[in-house]
Length: 156
Image 1 (cartoon, helix red, strand yellow):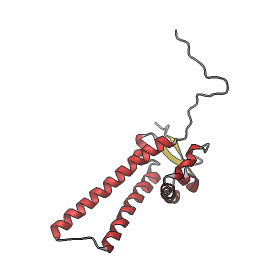
Image 2: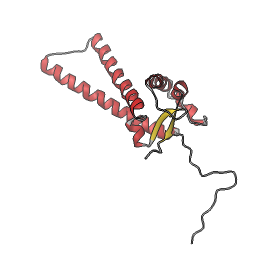
Image 3: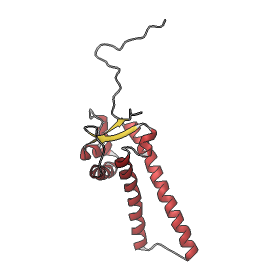
Image 4: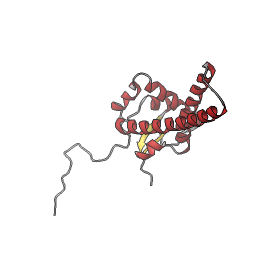
């Protein structure tokens, strides 16, 4: 019979329920790839239709509309998943879930604040994610702004 070693005094084997920077980064990468794939497919379909109709080139207005469409798809992707299931497909793949600090569901208002915070966290070379390394609940800028946390999903 093999003996099991117990942890040294003062140490616990209870896993931390909050998601760390690596799992969050991988989930975000997967989500960005999925969202960009949706934009790419939509753009390809529109380009196909435009090529069948005639010679279509994007002028300044067309480029602005394309940028607006891209932003709408990306924002909708994250907000819809956060409000409906509490997790995006990338988060689901890694077993993560976003909740309010008291464990409740993320509503539309919090999700909207969170997506703005996500953009602000990404813009300065992802510096908005650095608090994850030092905060007890591993919160990033978007979590502080929206009052949310990202936890490992323990639901069946």
